[in-house]
Length: 458
Image (cartoon, rainbow, N blue to C red; front, side, top):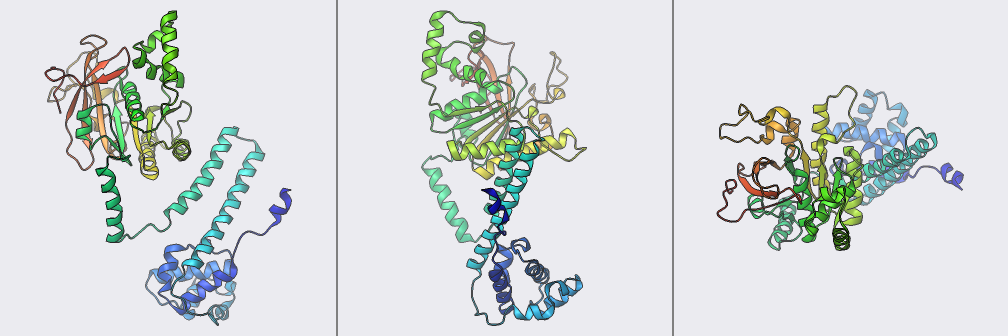
């Protein structure tokens, strides 16, 4: 069944290619449209591709596009004889009517070009599958990436100069959404953080949250996802720190007041029944967990799938220290981390979603073992975001940089003082603190009541 398909010629439209070239000779201003919509690779016939490439070279330096000039450019590149000489150029425009737009022609050529690229991608996928040199999941991931790259290239078409009219229309849509408190912002459970950060996590934003182990940053991320789900948002957690079941038990803990640590250790029958009953109320909670994927390209692929299928609009990466990126041979960890954080920012912008990335601070950026030599001038013990991220690129990528510090040695385990430092906000003043109380038993934070001395209020 497959042989007849493989023997078919690749999709192409030679006559339309020739028409586009001829119309440009008749009206050089049409090259403005052609250069915006077409690339030389969109032309299937080699001679047509060479002619268009020569036209582009002349166009970019402001020269006239006539057969004599194009012939000279082709001769300079030793390509004139290959396309059939100047006589071939003269034949391109004979008998053509003048047109004012190349839109329909360009759409056809781009479509044929896309079909050829799909065929090539399919051949590559088939070859990789038949060779059986990689794990099937790796081959499948490569296949998805190949197709998605083609779609991404299509989405970029037409981007460039934007008029004030287009920007005004986009602004009205955005402002209307802000006024109606629609899905453009994902609120957090803490009012003071929302107040300080434009209502919460905004679409296309990347938030970075750092904190040392056992200070509760994973619990904070879980609480944000839980609260978001209660307000109609859907989250996807990429976790290399905990299994999906362990994360589920953390969502379960505040609903039963049974610490997740006790669930793992074993429960009596009454609490087992209480926990089972609570799980039923969580079945439709809009939260998904991936405890396998950690490569930034695969994260993007999986995100695209979940945005399309499940309308996910919040991604959590827990935590970036265990994520990876494929780079050139010899690249160091700092370059890899920069790629990971830029990749997360690109995911937020490409899919119009919010991304929260968790990370451990560097060991030399905060007070350790009770020594005060690492305190900052204001007495702060917690690390600074820009000093703690694995690389400076991480700090450059985020829209909001947060640092969580919990006083583990103070108070009751169910009510320890904590502070969330807002160290960075793109295009906004930063430096505020959000005082919190950490319930380590159920891994949740809440804001202290007025008059409580825990932390300085924002």
